[in-house]
Length: 407
Ligand code: ASP
Image 1 (cartoon, protein in one colour):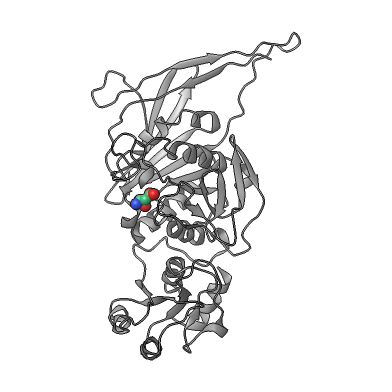
Image 2: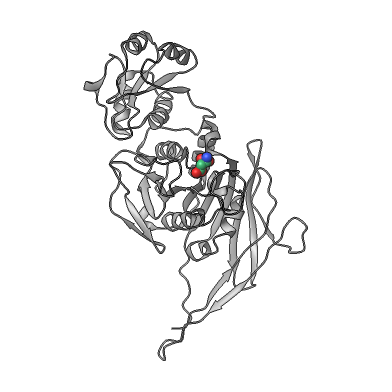
């Protein structure tokens, strides 16, 4: 068998403004690289699709092409060149984080997150072109601690819109690891597609020794392009492992394997680009939820209040004045002091009881206050995501409790 592999490696900087969608496509017929600007968002409006051949003499755009041809010795019987099977496009939505971080050469700490663009991330992994045609959207470029509900809603709405395109087979979101689990869980409850939606990031900035971003991005695109990932809800891919959005959490401030899933564990593995699934979530997600954010530009406000020994419960009154709901990160199985009990009993907004302990479950029998909601096994930060969505539908605590068991 004789096989010619043509790789076009695109390097350089492409100036962008606002949110734009860029297509990287190799065109073996002309050996040129085409950059397609699909949409540009300014003040919430979308420009019509437009396709422009790259002018390599342009001042803002530098595109370098390298053609690599490798040959395998042909057997006597087989002479036809094997055409690659065309895969659907994977859209990468970049939001920033350490994966887009830049710092002192070789160092792992003290860098600037959210610095590299989507195109920079893609250019660093030319192997992506072997997996699927890639399109990129720069949604924002921030430390993930600055992600807001409006970014979540924009991501959900863009994915919901783009997923109608039959040429698109999946999505990858690059994101900071600090709040990746919250974005993943929000999207798991609000995207309305069976197409794979994968979130990834990195623990080491792009300039560190042995940066983990390129491999995480590559493996995420492999999962997003995989038929196996269809209908599994939003997934997080990190350090060769695949996690469901509901169970994934960050468990270390520095470890390159900081993303895990506690008692639940990973649901799959990626090895050399091959995707292996072993488990899936039994909770309702994506197309099976009641949440619709298409007409929203913000979410109800929820405060997460930690409990620790001898804390002033007055903070609960302050939080209630500034929030539509509260999540308590209680001790043990969602417990707290008599002072907390007294104030919580007086509050007029929904209060969800979770635990400051990473693993575990809280059921109604654990509740110290009537009229509060047990978080099941959701940690406080994810309970806050679900409570914000629940409050878009109802303020009734028994209905909210049902949602905590369902999702
Ligand atoms: N602070 C960074 C962020 O969440 C950490 C990371 O990405 O690993 O954006």
